[in-house]
Length: 453
Image (cartoon, rainbow, N blue to C red; front, side, top):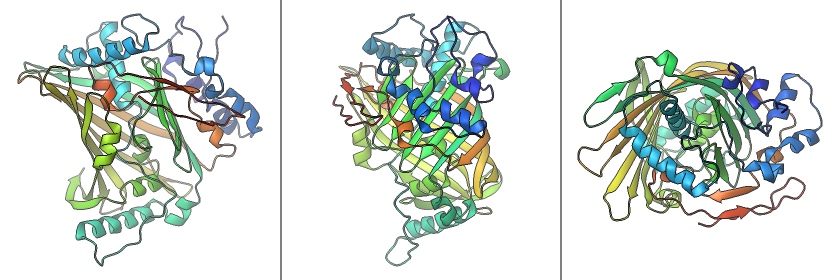
């Protein structure tokens, strides 16, 4: 069978599959962004028709086909509700087991955990970069809010200025990532991954953004791939084990874009934040801005037995440079099993942003690292589990106002099963009821996307 060229083999050979022999799984369809990326790197702009034709969303028969190279411990294919049930059961059993050993089954389980948590997390609340930031006001404004507005004004200026940021209509970023599940803790013992060089998974990602509120990300790691996107009205994600899913709740930005890649969206995210004090981060004095998701957003994101209790985001802005140097967010989910005690999942992600350099006048963080803690507790006193994961990334290429990028590049898959891609569905022990909805495509344009649980 003739092999098709994978997405990341085009982008500087970032695909993990490039360094190892290919599996016998069916060839993958081309990425919605691969055609444009190839033209960008060859410095040659072709007409947009071939790019639109290559979009996976224009091939309904392939759009929802799970990637065969993804981990599947049970070796089953199809059966979406059973797949999600196995994922939920695995989540509970994986954290209760011992450390990652050399067996392939445990390694695949760790890979699922890494991609599920770090693949494409979203920001806490909806923001719109089209809306202008509020003017700095002191009168009739609490000191915490007015201080936050002042800090954001300094951040915008340090990042390149509002005028330059407003001139950017789309952007592209490509980088490398390295992830590892480094520590597993139960009530009885703590086990650490002592061989981080062998246990880590390496890969790469590409991120495309376009105003208003559109983005697409594709991340390949350890032979598997997660891709997600937003067309301004709908957020979706595709994983090898769950297929394509739409996100519940309002449209939200990708968290990875807030990690030093999109200053304008970052400033808009903290518009309603409060300044709660100061703290040293890596020996650097920083102001702390705190943003909480409102109750209406939390309710909209909850579903079935899973209730999202809180989602808080902290931004640490350097007093010396004015730039964002640390990002921390924490969310708590409550799972009420039928006839059983409630179980709580708390996920905390700490990201450190480093190596700021200007790209066309915009300050971009070219490297960083994240530390994730996944804590499960609540059903019995001695059943808590804690998992620690780490990620390091480096940005290799950034471009703004890429010619040829259009709304057609952000069309979601032709069919979506309505199920939350947030922590609610991934931690729930009860299978989520999903209803398949269809979208009508006419000249590469979505005419209707409507899903009800």
